[in-house]
Picture 1: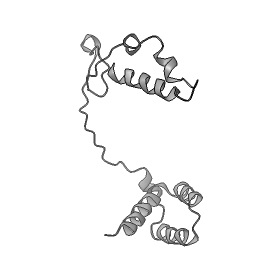
Picture 2: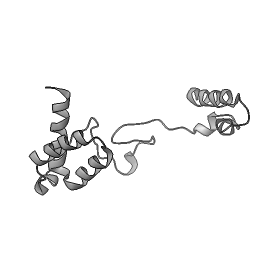
Picture 3: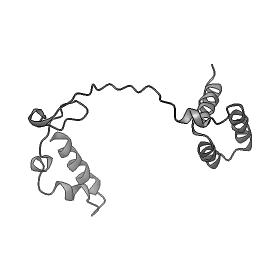
Picture 4: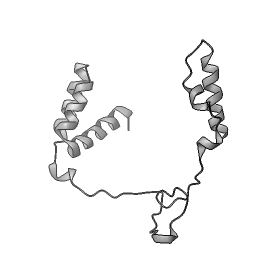
Length: 123
């Protein structure tokens, strides 16, 4: 399948589910009349179906959700069942690190900003 045909098929599917707001968004960003005509044809072939916009689509996730409650809650920044380490980044950085990140004083200020960013990366 060619890329252009696949793109039109995807645009048609979006139009079936999202309808006039999606069509308005697409046409607001496209200035080429021939492309606008091609997309209008695609949208006409794939009419908006209000029932499909409320369809329940299967959802997939790479994170297994777990129930954690009360005292069993992890002390780290657990997000979606993942245990993330937490620490105070500001305590690891020098006092003027944030100031150096915003430095605009001279032509070589970029060097100070770069050094500050590297310091954050090392922390």
